[in-house]
Each structure stands twice: as structure tokens, then as C-alpha cells.
Image (cartoon, rainbow, N blue to C red; front, side, top):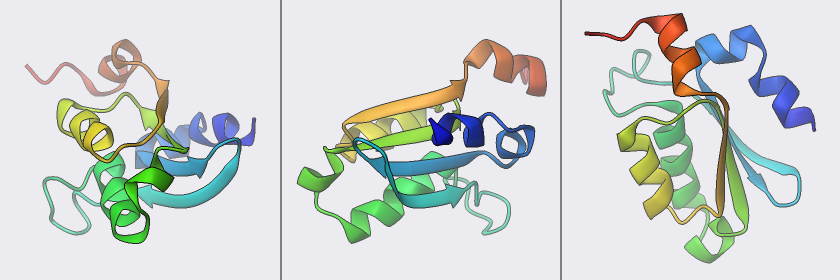
Length: 106
């Protein structure tokens, strides 16, 4: 599937990108992390794509969509995806791999 090739690219992982797709496989939105570019501490890619999608689509439509993300969502983003009513969330990089790339921040 094209989406998995895209989100596994090293540049996508560094940019932290999320995609909202209708099921079975049609892209709807793409959003990068805007935390630093927009000076928004809640601007993770998953939260940003959900904010944009909730302005454009009804929850019933979002239920038929999937959110694909480069990395495992943080707790905040997982909540946003849940409350946004997205039917499925998929990520390419699990938390263990993310910690190897970024450190444990302790």
C-alpha cells in the first residue's frame, strides 16, 4: 500500500506526518507537525490533521476514515483521534523505535 511506503521514509519520520484517508484507500488530508513552525505546543501532526478534518467533515464521515501516522501517537493525540471519531488509526514506528531515535527524555 502506498501510504506505508510514504510514512516509513526517514524524512517522513523526521517530519512527523499524519494522513487522513477514507477507507478503503483514498487520501483526504496530510498534515505535518506544526508544533515549532506555528509555536503551538498542541501542534503534533495527529492533532493538527484532526483539527483540520473536524472543521471539514462530520463525525459520521470520519468514522469511515483511517488516520495513518509516522510514529505512535502521544497520549494527547490518541485522545484527539478517539474524540474525533476516526474509524482506525495506524502508525509505522512503534514507541520502542521512537525512543531509540529520540531518547527517553528522562
